Amino acid sequence: MQIYAILENNIYIEMAIATLEKNGIPKASIYAVPLDNRGEDRKLFDGLHRSDGTSLIDIGVALATAFSVIGTSIGFELAWGPIYWGLIASFIGFVLGVAIRLFTEKVLKKRKRLLKGKHPEVILIIECEKTMTELVENILWKHFALGIAKVK
Image (tube, helix red, strand yellow):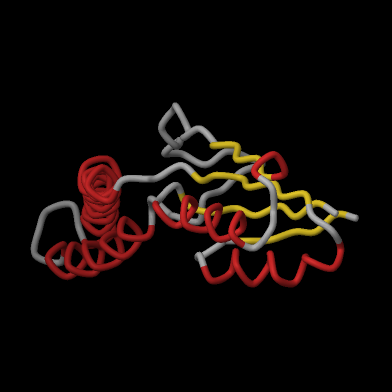
């Protein structure tokens, strides 16, 4: 039987492998494969068939609404009237909101990602007898496995 487990690349992998060896799993039956990190940055704009769940226009729409109300109110006193000034203020608010959102996504969140750092994960493949699967699973869960799969 084969057991596949995904773990973060840290000391717990070594501890899990050592514990498995102490419990009778031979070293030749344990295989670790490190995964590579993504080489390119994530795309900022969503495509037709892919979305990352973040919106760039949410702040822009909110600011466009607020600015249009203010622009319309002030437009009663100005030469072009409330409709034109409401539209102008709405456009300015939308552009300002999108610029704020782009700045936060490109600069601030990029800094957070660099500080936090992403560690590559490791796939651990263990071949064992069917009677040992529960023991192997318990050892892997105790050593913070992210996920486990069994294949007969």
